Length: 482
Image (tube, rainbow, N blue to C red; front, side, top):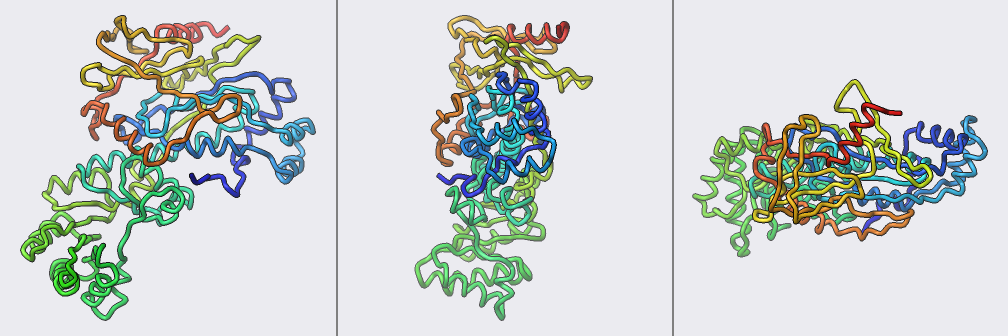
């Protein structure tokens, strides 16, 4: 399994205030105070119904590799604001936190902890930026990918966005996240090498323009790749030249070899109209099995429109609007202190704001998903105190955390704990699954959602409630912070 941190130390990829606070904690004797942090998000991108969690593997690799080099220590020394004691602390740094997280490929909803970190104040604070960076980015792309794949209605979607990604890691890890969300492969060769996401691709317009004629270009490509021949047909005139030249190539190069074409690709123009006309011409020529690939600034909305217009497409190459999540390019994950320990007892902490959505939920938590025993569909999530257990033999009443008169009772149900142990006292206790296993898990997770939750427009709002104990604790701190 490829290690993202191999040959590079990312420990300093952190906001500077994490180090100034860490220095201050030491000066105040708080460096060993046990703290609890929740990583969660407040809003689903694109006003969608759910999020796909991704990026945990890279977070695990980062945490395993946390250390400060001599050069790092000298960097801080030269700032002339950090104490000698702090520099010694960094030189002897050892990660000792406990971490719980939702596995990659999980379905998640607003205000649920995706990651919980428990540990000494300095350590838990220092990892904030990287934890957010990797979970925010990959969850954003995996979620966008899932939406696009569902819009394709069972047809293959390929990730084609490397050249428009915002940096090398965004291209490579973005393609990884897109695979978790459901794409079948990527144009990014490095992602194939590092993560075994199948590299896919045929030709660019420059291939066609390199030859004296489009027909010459097509025939050369067919001779080179007779078993995997997909031709780009829109370099000049799709219907007058591209499709006729493709058919002639299939007849004169592939057919004598006993080979069948894989497809043709349309990258410009009125794709709905061109695909319908191309389909007729290919069928009339005896190539009913020849696929038609569409690319060119696609996303879930344009793909849906193409189908509404009767487009005859068998697969899609989706680039910039996937790899950058262009329609909603920020995943607003946050990392908030929710509790500390004093004399071995957990003391909940709350952040209060004039913006109600920014008020945190205090305490050490677990998240339970409630499933119907008959349909096995997910009906609600319940955020509880970490020590709480749910008795599935008794009716379970839950209530809206704001509109408390809105209540629902479950009787024929079972539950699953969503947060699993990842690190214990700094040691990784989680067996990282393969990317194929994560993708398969993601498919199963999405299948547990009702179709109403998966709508692109105005999806049903999935229920996420607080247990009575957790709600009481939050209410008490809201009204009496002393």
